[in-house]
Image 1 (cartoon, rainbow, N blue to C red):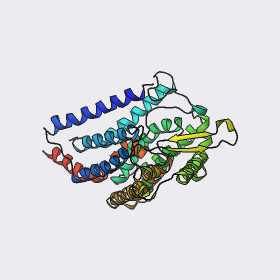
Image 2: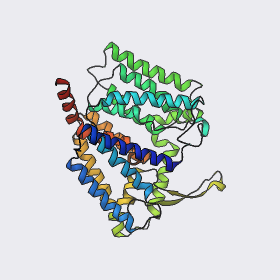
Image 3: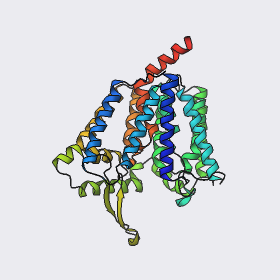
Image 4: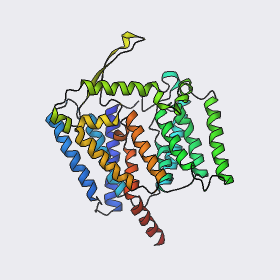
Length: 364
């Protein structure tokens, strides 16, 4: 495993290089930054100052993710001619290859201290590509086709090997919304691809390649509210809210970036494992926002996402977006510490302009 410091420094250098390349090579020294980018940056600076006021011991644990995010979005805004769907397909295949190499012991694990974890879980890179592909299809009103079906079959092994219920459920819901196209429902190709996805999924789940842990989690795909991990996170969230000692000002403005939370988690089966846990988050994106920016930041987040929601072209795209945001933030803070999630608001806000520029370049 690459040390966290080395990885963060390497990732920062890569992002700086990408932005510099876009600035010098593509934009010829003229970066494009829309007004909303400056507005978000000012809002972030306000809450960052609050964090410095409280003098957190390790504020960079948060700050680095926001720095990555701003740099990555700057790059996206100035990337020029780029086929995002093709990139998502390539990224999806690359993640599949990496997990296969990890699983068969060919590649050392740069993302964790071990490859195989609890009950067969495989640790590796982020598994977001199939989510981005499905969301792109909903956003562009694309029907189920062979590339999407193939992408899902490619993604299935790494979704199952990681035993990540959150991304499995999100992918399943987005895929269902894509397939729920009554105009295409009875076309032979549509039926064939749908049947292939269902049969392949069942076959893989029942095979020896599927980790034991995923077979335990599988029943919760259709009823995630009964999932033990979700219940634990809800309990952790409740404990965090009850134990926080915010005054009125802190409830409105939070404690700024760099804040952490400690809770006591009791293990009734093995008391020796009962102890205090200190989190950068409580595996809950909404609490992450509240703790750092109070009700004000949470309100800003909801308003901005309402704006994004209203820009989506169809009810199916809106339903997929709402489910993706809510479910991701209920079970993780990936929405705030994984820069690839910024592709979602970027495609909503800039997708039409980007597509028009692509057509102009083709016509020229």
